[in-house]
Length: 278
Image (tube, rainbow, N blue to C red):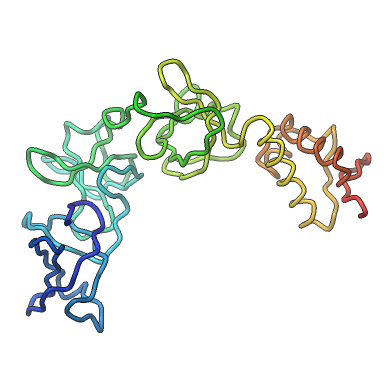
């Protein structure tokens, strides 16, 4: 099946002067122009391509890799603004249009914005939108405490970083749970810290509870091994220094050190942490 805005693995049906035609096995064909045709490709070979509409609104295939897929999110740069809307660079020859009605704030050329890509049912075109809340619905998820999820940073709020969770839901990373620099568009692994009654998600960048202790302890121990068995950190170390080195709060760091100490993997001295002799 050929789906605009997504990758499809298609069969090479026939070759023409303008390119090769690919088919989906269901009677639908699409052109892959000559400039994208790989060398040594033959009829009946299979090829993975991205399908979209060209400048003349014709379905076309490409071997280029777009920065965003249909129903996905990403942080894209505006290359042009005209009477129709803003045009964003998404890695293809034809830019992605964000109509004015789909702009949360008026877009400016040269700036980047977090957008969602979708198929407009009226025009049958792939378009973008920075009105992200229209496409993020939390009422359908079954996530629970400490579940691991993939997130993408969407915007900074007074409380923390608003993120897109699993490409479908909205979540929040409170500033108190972030111990490394973040930027809009950044993709990370996170953990569910709390599911609120309205299904809103509070997240953290480290596992919670016992899992957090194991992960934190392992992180500190690996850092210890990579630094010849010594780390110059102790009870009086500044929280900022700990955050910069380990991307951990001082509280989480001390808990991780406590786990290693109880397991007799380290020795604590006034000048820092030493690897225990085994």
